[in-house]
Image (cartoon, rainbow, N blue to C red; front, side):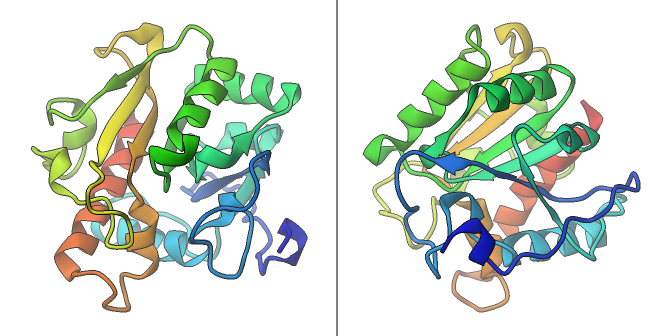
Length: 236
């Protein structure tokens, strides 16, 4: 299905409260893997993933997230600058126009924080994400942040061993879930602009957390990672 054929709600009007923002993009690499219903890659786990996540975020933190909707925004949408945190699914299929590249670069440099999720290192997905970010931030370098020492792992929950979470039950269990970040000035002591869950799919856990598809403990851990990302993004 195309974007127009997806069952999407209208975007939530801005009122200063936290809203889950999902990035929409054109794909230069065909359909996304694992998308039930055949939607575009960026829509994987929509809307149940963000619906469940914002409910948990609202319940256990002081972030008063809006529960009456979420937003889907293009990379070149000026509305993006109203929201400090953005989420992208399946960046292995991501491609950009020049305008989108320029707008996304400005968003990250002005304080935006992006979460890349739901992709595997094989089939060129990690390579494509790296290439797209080279276009956005040519000077930036990805740095692995798996040792549990970075503040993102302690912004709300204490995650001492980020590698303890398995990739996802639907993934090849030989895959190793790792986390990579892009930092301001390539300095790990400065602000984290982007984080990538390589071989990870947090949103898949969120989407099916009410079905028994994955063990409760794993679902709970996946929520912890997402909440830490949001709290970090709101406070840095």
